[in-house]
Length: 150
Image (tube, rainbow, N blue to C red):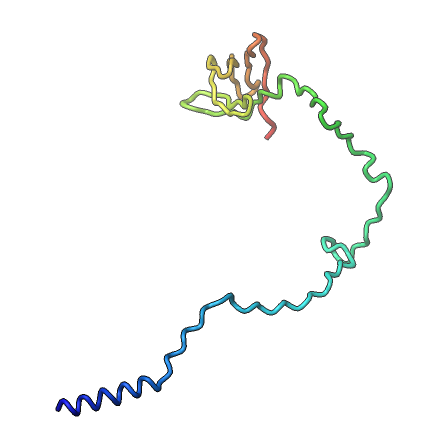
């Protein structure tokens, strides 16, 4: 049996020597370049105002079209002082626990205050639905803020 096994090994060795080695796997490279997209035609400008209906006549530009507009302040110019009333406004009246309180906007914040209560050194003196809100300012003066028109 040894001679038969030796013959099989010899045939296998001859077969392996005559068979070329397997080809090496190709090394992946950069993907092939995508074909260039077709050149788009130049964008055509619309022949009419796309925001106006087609049956409207085009508006003619007049040289004095903006003559009635207010003049803009120069860059860097100081803004006009809006006055003390600009930092405080009456937003509305609120009824809480049977009492009427004022919703007051003070320097960007809304607070709800009743008579005798204060915020940011502004004190509510009185609140009435008809006459508005009497407010004592930080300088001691008193002013009446009327409810906003509804």
